[in-house]
Image (cartoon, rainbow, N blue to C red; front, side):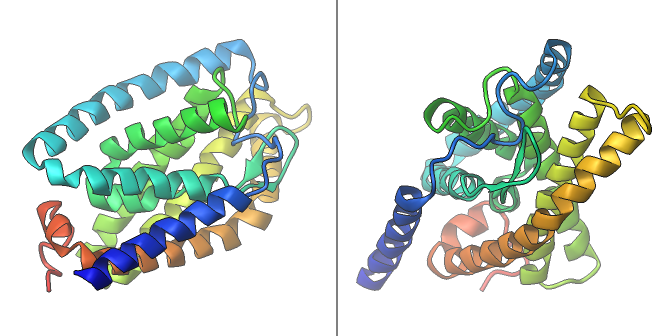
Length: 251
């Protein structure tokens, strides 16, 4: 019991130190405040809201049935907050960073992670000036809606074809990361089509620049997510079984 408390305290301390020393430059969190035309900002808010409503119902149901899962829910949010605060400048008006949505998706599902991801983006826009309120709908759609959906279907698909638990988690986290930036590239291409190639030309430009930094970041995020999941498997076995994450892999 003492070893478990020490281990969890070390993990919390580690992420706290990361938060303290993360550079606070005002790079945009995905798409920065005021960067999108107003009609696109409103559109992305509209397509994001239904996922948030469904996600709130999903979280309420899980927490009502099993109140002990609140700590795991908070961990999922903290993990996404820390990873998505690590930013590398990529193109004008945006940046590259891990997303951290894979862990929460594997634990709670894609709809619950939509709410967690939205809250993460909201806090970062208000507290760290990363992203913005007008572009929050667009940023949430790419990272908190599409990202978790990719993670969920990749994880389930990988398990179905016989991949190990660790490989399935790795693929879910890494491809959700990459998928987020494919969607972000498409959002920027829709708002700012190229004069020569139109939307397709603009998408090719944004996605190719993103890929330079996002591919290694996605691989790193996949590995880190597996490490965190291994720690949870060792010290939070009961919660993982309640969430049915270890229904077949339970030890």
